[in-house]
Image (cartoon, rainbow, N blue to C red; front, side, top):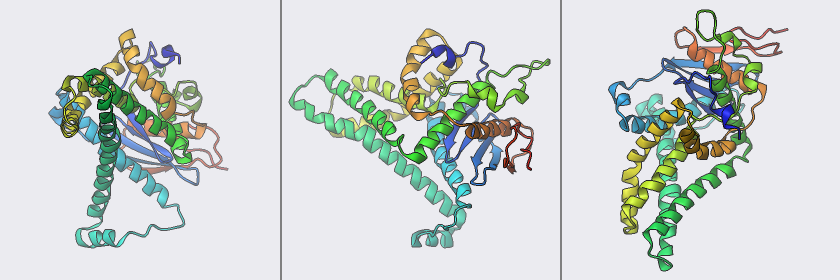
Length: 345
């Protein structure tokens, strides 16, 4: 791992960030958010919207981390569902809603059904995360009291087990074909953001977006210091440190206090990630290493078609158009230069 290629000296960091989804990428800028999905016919569907704002809450340290964490969770699940819905329009088999879903739609409308599915998915994701990575480790380590009463070693083993379970889980799912493609799109997102932050400038000093091509993006690394994966590793590491301060009370009290600490951990992790994204000194590099190591699993080398999707998402975020839905034709590809469409024979 060459840190000099990740913490690029002459880069101009932006507030732009993204998320890999099914066959595509969501890219969020300060003003606009874009969802670009590669369709089965090789075209790229690009949907844009205004980026949601939160006012003063995002200016308060720690508080903004909690807001960002829960927003990214809800919006992340929503974006995955949106990408699945776009791709679902091209499937032969139509989804047959359950009787309960049909009742909700009749009683409250299709929007209520969509919100029900969305927030049910979020609650399930939270329950899974809390159960596997918070409750399970502290419960399993509780049996070690037979061997030792040391508060240090009990907390230490719990922290190591929690991080180990998370890394093992991510590594295991990386072998699933669909997840592997998502990780490739994740790599495409990082490469393209790196490239965007290192664009040559025009005579007026503004970035030359015409230079954002597949060839320009291809040589950048798939690892990025301002990644959500790094945020998750900061969460686990900060939790590892803070739990030592709570001692080793009863199992029920440990679970309660660990859950109560989650907002504090999320807030601290967010501030640490923002600092890491703005700096490239040796302290930041050392703190970023665990997250970058994990990105070796969560990002894979993308192909050129995935870089095309990432470029489309960034250009859609940066253009001056009103939010809309558009389709970029890419059959018989010649050369990709968004927003110009591919030439078609």
